[in-house]
Image (cartoon, rainbow, N blue to C red; front, side, top):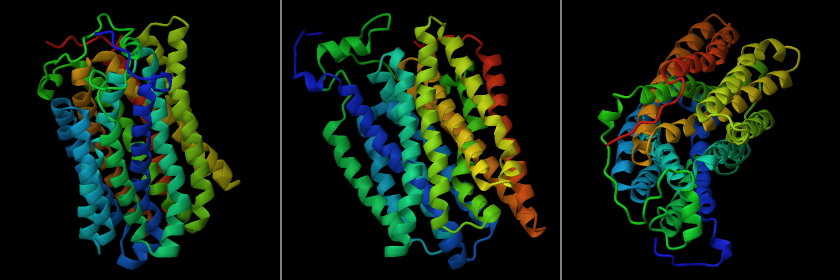
Length: 439
């Protein structure tokens, strides 16, 4: 440390500005993912004659590419750094987003969604690695919660603006406008992002605070060795995190891609009529993101051990997801009950996700965070592929029997128990979340 004071007080919390960059891209990320589900019933299925299996295959193309991207991009970001690694994915993302506007059928959409999935895989490893670099341990859960709430903002905005864009300008513009926003994000990224040791606006005071709960404070400019992701596969901590992702990421994928279709089939809602229920669901899920970021930190402030605080929070959120299985039953009384129960489930998921991501920074050094998140994200995407394929087969089968509601009940049951199952596996693998000391 050189003791040099750099900028006035308004720049003393640069870490929150950095987090806001990821919040913006996370918002756009989830807005982009929602578009195809929102256009499915009123535009894409009638225009291209898709079946439930066709739609499932397009979703799977996204998820398979996302899985591949998670593994490769997570390692790339650890190797070349967040600044340039994430910039590469943003450029590919903007091209892929525009490719959706040019698609003219099943194959075209599968290719476009595949490239989009590959590029968007860079968002989570970059964000979690940045949180590990920019925030002390006591603030990481809150930062992850705020970051996760960006997903909800994107999901809230999408059902409000996408139908309006499609009606006013045509459905292809629903993909063009996010492309333009992505290009703006690239410019903002290069304008503002650096790691703390290189950022010219970080004061010594903030730099010391960021590392205040570490055993030692690394010097600015210190170069650390990289770790190969193959080595990380030898640790049970990696597989514990991957288990959390494998069983629960698919739930979010399913709700994101099939919730509009469920509401259409169950209650006959048109695209415009979906706006209020979807907005309600994702507003509730935003509260979960913030609760997830706050709760384990609250336990820590009360003197709980780190592993106990994280696991207790995860268990509570797993229990909150269980009522999802009753969504259809209560929805027969009034659809608003189904919306509230699904909203509770999405809130539980986002709270779970925010807490889950911090377990990586709790168990691994910063140089491995991007790779571990990438491995876990890949495993989670594989789970998403399996559930999407299963959803397509189940819904196609029961649709043929004119009992599609039964298909949705089976899928809600699978989703409801996934969190508790993954919590049990996590607790068996790493009951006290031991630290991984990499060479």
